[in-house]
Length: 362
Ligand SMILES: [Zn+2]
Image (cartoon, rainbow, N blue to C red; front, side):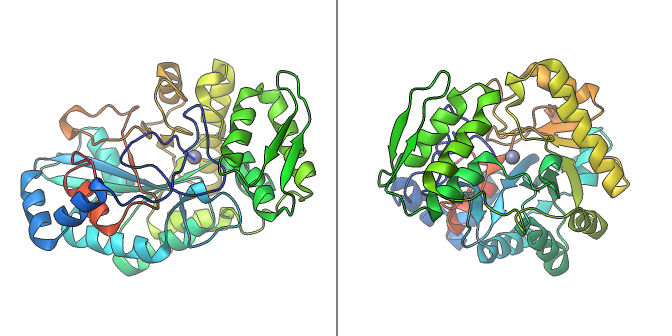
């Protein structure tokens, strides 16, 4: 789960969107000027020119979430379909160098020099479909990736609030939800025919003190008349995570509970950082060097204190969801930038964004 503020990479969809800059607010697919620009530049001839224009050494880190055609939970987490991921990985393999976690570690430690553009693929949140994606990457293309796991969601029965509320909205037969007053929030009737019903609920969620948020999720489920969704098959199992590691992929930490780190006291941030690192290392039997900040927006959801605490916890590097590319000669290991793939990332957009290192705003 990330913050989505890049104008070039919003998510489109219908379910829960996240205000306060935390969630990704989706809008319907648009095929405007940027789409046309991408389509033109994505042609074989034009993309060859784009590739020549941007051939300086650079590191582009691409971030995915769920890989699916249809989900029962939060649509906002779907990055792309299995078929489009397969196309993207095949195209990457044929056109640009793809770095795995070991090469990333060498680059960050100054043990490797990058003399060309390169890409690193990352997957956040540990959903079960990521296992199939990881298997496809390795079995079909021998392309390694990094998988960032929020340990509190693995084999615990815990479902993230965005998935619980999206599931309730998708499965209710009610036309509106009456949410009772809660501490700082007045009671409210949510019209489910409104396209902003999901985002309104998430606004309410983030407006509440952390200790009250669970109560709102339960109130939504009660008003919808929908039981909490089953976690069966939602997240990877520890066995699947170990298998990904065994295939040659890199396992990274993504906190324990996927909180907004910047809102937590330092001691709680330490627990999220060190706790997820320790559990993962015990489960996979190997060091965990990389951390991905939940939501990933600098100064909004994580800050310099979080970055310092990540270093203190023993991580080698941490990845944000700030868009853009990384200069391999001036890497900032605790603020590595990533670009998002989302349902509006057409094949042409993907080519142009990768070849131009995200500089051409398609
Ligand atoms: Zn996440």
